[in-house]
Image (cartoon, rainbow, N blue to C red; front, side, top):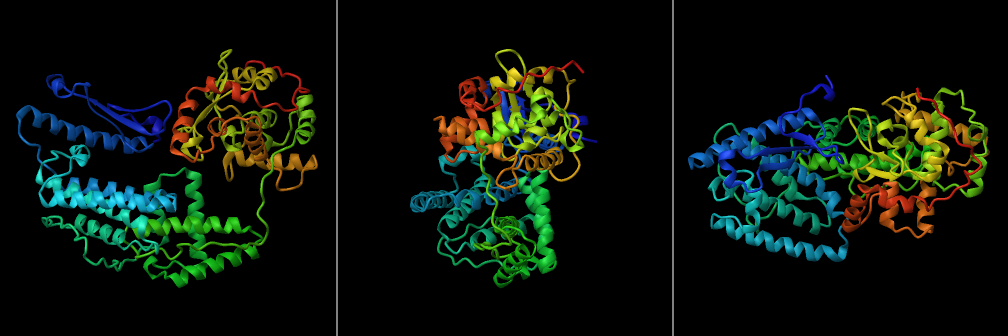
Length: 545
């Protein structure tokens, strides 16, 4: 059974510009006075899996049913302590999984200021908890778990937030990056979750108490760390497969060791073995370092779950490989002229190679040339991803798990106006000639990276036959071409990123770019800044299939 056959629980839905499910529940008519907006809850379910979304929605529906009954009777809603602790621990795991990524990007000059602000919050929260209340700035967050003044909520939610603030402070100030607080608190919460008898009240750590790293005594291995990483990160399948290969490589080089047996010395040994592997197999240092980065992320998850006391791969990197890194260069106008003078475009001579995907060979390079999209993004397009209405022609690059459409990151979801040159060449006619479904139905999908991988092999052979044998010239050179041309034409970074789907660096820039992606028409003048030597290509004619 796939997601297409799963019935959505009432209230479960998705926004048009998101793959994450949402849940909405309207307040009963007799309680509308308590909910002026009419909604009891409108919240993200934080998952793109429909079955998981349904399960979360059912739990929320039951929880709010109890809240409604409590409002009607005036009695306080009973607090399910095991459920409360389970929900807080789930939130804890997700929060600490993001700490490294979040705080590694904080500039050194800002760390002291942020750490001081967190310390002030810690001291205020600790004082409030000794008085049996929550600070006002935490009450709204506590209300989703029950009555924010209930002793159980104050103790559990307040203690949870205090620990979270302390590990955030530790992430900003611990230069050794061993994070003993994080390991200790995670183990404490796991032990608490495992109690069968009535648990003791949560004991708040004393600010001056010496913190000792936990000493894990478990048999967890790298495969367990991978499974935990998958459950927390929810990355695209391609990324998961890459991390699985990297985990398998660790086992191949070091053996399937218990994680708590991997010392810093062994981490350095693995780094050295990985570098020797790169040299022996003619791999770049970047390729080997990417493996090290993946494994460091898996060890981070294992550390945050309390399975080991530190990350043995922390701050290790690979500088030397078996060959130089292969950079990518944009096509020049002369090179584009040579490519598009091929009979494939001048005479519509469609290749017979299966990997070329028939009409895909004609259109995919042109789309890349006038959008800067990645090969996999173009190869996975469907007909309804393209709007052909005159004056509103647009190509949308989006994710859809049911169709197998994936994007590199959330910033890659975008709508790009169709360049006038694509319209002139007959791209809208091609789209309209097809039944609803895949835009390039003849592309083979087997092998790594699916249809994009197969087409990439064909294009590699094609460009080599044209005399472009340097690895610096590849299909990805179209993407570099568009990015560089837009900036040379004085397009702002945010506008250029909205076209290409690059992630911006600043929060304001990301928000601005996300807004304009929903308004593709505002980008039409930007896309028309691109001018390439394709005028010699005659328009194509397509009949309805």
